[in-house]
Length: 278
Image (tube, rainbow, N blue to C red; front, side, top):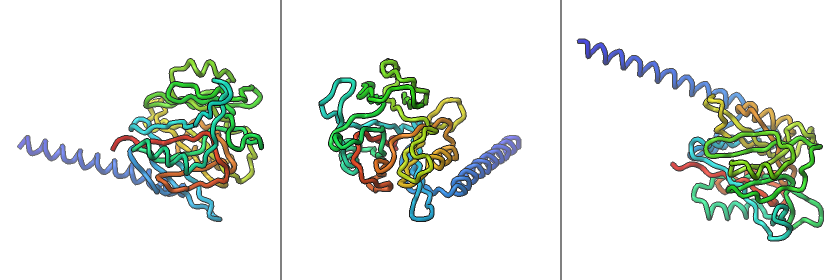
């Protein structure tokens, strides 16, 4: 009789736990729908959400969960000119970058435009990057604009966690850091045609499990958006720290071979997103 009572108590707890879990999942789903975003693509550790706006101008947010094996790579092809710390990079179309990324990486999920770069008429085929980039523990560029006049932030990625710190214009210090992947961008409040509806790429970090460590990276992409909309969107998805990347016609995004955000410019630096292992 005691065994039967214990079993009934156990099953009651299982039902209660299941009910709580389902309620939590429904609340999350309702919240996502309330924000107007729909999940359109996913793989292990990565998801792509879309919000349809008026005028055929969708917003996209990707979530990259480092704790589930998903990761980011910073892709740029050195053109073997310039100096070791200030090289030039070949500008490519994003579909071309995606083809190479997909061919070499079995878990390729998406590619997104990245770093700011020089855009004058003398740099239509090769160009230099504005701020520091580190990939696979190697500084691939110190950047040409490390002055303190404009506020900047640095995304650091190390194993299953990310961090975003203030960048104070010292690329040598970044090189000494243990993080194998890092990327410097602008503070989200810096005025880059703030109120204009142009292409935008913004990145945020999120502590999804509330352990005071950031294991998720969020990426906002749109062909037409204001800075305020990009920041507001990432905050709604839970981002606590945010930075701005290249925009305008350079802001582009491809996921699983489909061009969701298109632009007319070729670009020298791309963020490659890999899903985790299934």
